[in-house]
Image 1 (cartoon, one colour):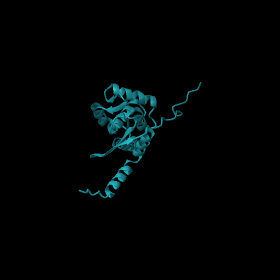
Image 2 (cartoon, one colour):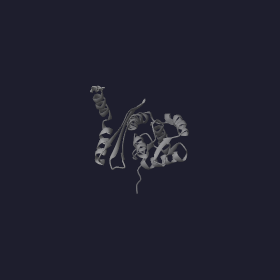
Image 3 (cartoon, one colour):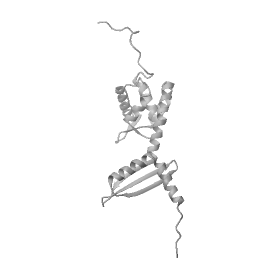
Image 4 (cartoon, rainbow, N blue to C red):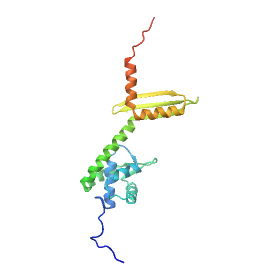
Length: 190
């Protein structure tokens, strides 16, 4: 049996090659997301480098929880601790610049999505009489912009309304404002 020489072994793709670098990357990611995130999101963000192996990644993530660098909530969300933040700041320069650039680009998109998700909320609640209440909430950095509750007769209609609102809350807000601003107030007669 013939073994390949060192020259024949293809190089490992990417810039990250060991578990310590994967841990640095995970800390870098979790220090920059605006809220706790699930395993899949941490994994998606860590895939900014081809050298990250899924099994090593999973092991490193679990190790960071065990060592108190990250917390794992009951609902499966990872968040960085103060210890993790300190170590992330110390170690971030150990990550290759190109990896940090790609990671920052992905983090920016992730944070936009998370921010949007926290600003646009739609929920449905069944009422005792068999109808539904749909609650549509829109907020910005300053607080609540709109909090609308509607009585809806059927569950499928309620689901449709919540989905449409999530896709385009600004449009609904604009239409409500136009309707309210364009209407002439009725005069009261004495």
